Image (cartoon, rainbow, N blue to C red; front, side, top):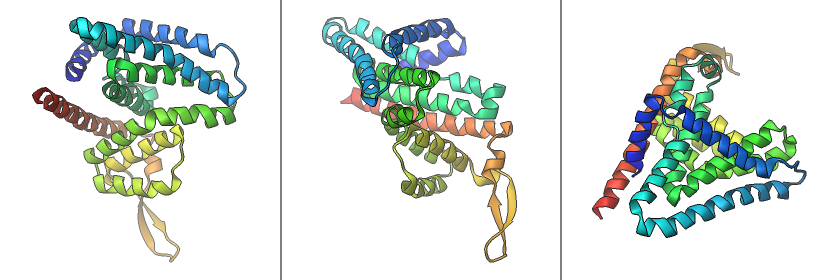
Length: 279
């Protein structure tokens, strides 16, 4: 089912057939979360309840669909899941963003890849009937709305950033693994082990780590080589990653790494799907 949905979504995206329907879907999501975010919030508990009450109706509706429709109308149930996948999982959007000037200068497409494709696809697979996918979309939309509203930075970091962390930490860890396999595995794993000392429960931490391991996975030889002097006054060679991070020319390397990570991820999903069919 997942592979069929993936292939169909790629075809529809390639021919730009999902732009309007996804725009309408996103508008409906924004209208839905507006019922929960229109009132100003002042305490942390209120924000947690907003996430809970926004996700609860979706969970109940989708569980009802699985309980009522799936046993008697399996084809209709499959079509509902397919429709949710097409609306919520963006396969090629990140690649289109990488071609724009904004994407090239800010690498925003990396976050689009991680959130709109990888994490969305991951949660679609993990929880049945699109529950994981739809709840993830709602959580992300509410968080973006709070950010747009200029929520107090302390409250945002304590509550919203933490909720985003818990919603993304598992898929991001899998993504780290696939990126490591796709590129410089030894250096990436060494960096991740070193990052244990700096680990914090923060979505911002996950985003920064993702960008860092992508550049490490690409390989240091792709970056400018500079010469520095260490504490013993000896010339040392160092790879200046920061100097090249905003060079649009590096985009092709980033896109290639993300493509390879996608292939490994989809291959694993395919193997699991085939194994389940053969059982």
